Length: 556
Image 1 (tube, one colour):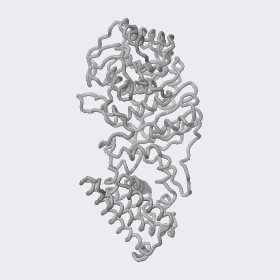
Image 2 (cartoon, rainbow, N blue to C red; image 1 turned 90 degrees about the horizontal axis):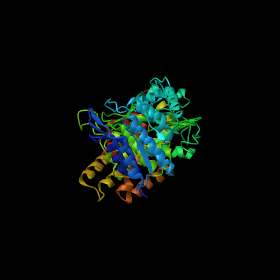
Image 3 (cartoon, rainbow, N blue to C red; image 1 turned 45 degrees about the horizontal axis):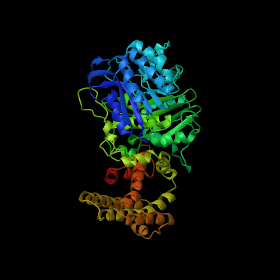
Image 4 (cartoon, helix red, strand yellow; image 1 turned 90 degrees about the vertical axis):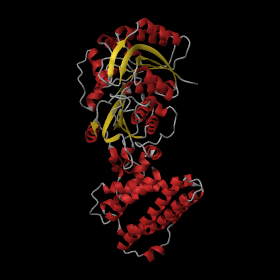
């Protein structure tokens, strides 16, 4: 059944926020959009020049006209302009609820535009606090709006300076009646080290950025990434499985300490090898934190900051996306996660050169539902990024294996290293053959033939360097050629060769993970204090320009 979503908000003549952003978001996320206009603005990317507010009775008439004829599955409330409009909105929502309607109501208490223009009069804020907060399903203020709401409710709230203060502010807002809050932190950029320290103080032991996988590196075998208890909110996420699902939706890892959980979103900046090839807008050194809470529990959504000046309409878009997902029947926690994911993706493709001020998001970039985001200069390997971020534990276990950890520390047994070198020589010969086979595939375009042939040539060069490294460790070329292929090597290489025989796509799937993994290991070990390791030449080889160029040819 087609979900129906209604926005009650102002109009943005520039198209970046208000009902324009809401309706674009509804369309992109598969909901039929409807609107009740509360105010008309004359604005562009630089700011709001004028506001015209229709009579509050017209807001009532618009809503009643829609609700008397069309089912409403979700409502998003945005700009309300004045107390009369806010009161009329509260009245129609209460009557709609009294009629037995079950749709989710998302309140985005818009008070100030991105450009700094005041959009809600002070007496209207009091009406929002008194009449709308208690009847909404979720309220989504930013930090400044949350402080204003708290002050109008009689609290002496100041702008929060830490996560602990933000958590207390969220609980203050919850005390005013809404069952849940998403306190947006987009205006509060936190340096990685500072955020890790604050999370530690809250009992959440989290590593962020490219070092987020390094915590699993150990000399001892491991089968999984250690983590705090998976127990989590009984209300927000219903069960540990729900938190796991939300984490996977966002391509993140989750951590829990008592009633507090955190979902850390991973991006290209967290994956060393992919960050080498991307003009990434995701900043792995600065983060924003959204606080999703009810009276019993709290989930922190920790996201890498998106570097862009085009942020007009972000709040409108997020609340509209949550509304669209809720209208589709998703539980509130999953709807919030879906909204956050949509906002991150539209921010990454935002339109910076539309005007001379703060540009809008590109809502249409995801109008066609895609399992994998489109390739772009900012995200040049979207499939690899998606697969790695959604299997983060396995990726970290794979690339921080005890064997490579010992190699970096110099504690690996020389006998084990030499055994590996001899088996890897056998593997590299097959690896070069497979890329030559890729270049000869009938489905290849001319540019692909050249690309795969170059990868094969680089693999041959890699093999020659490998032979020289073996000689330094006392293994001659003749001894390499006489090496007996181990059972593990035979199974792995024959699996690759069998896949290669099935066609180009199975071939790429079979060998790309190996190339990515080696590059990630090489770059990780190169970031450590490895110069005293007897295995430093191997590390230099797999973090070097030639090998990284061959990986780029494969995945970008």
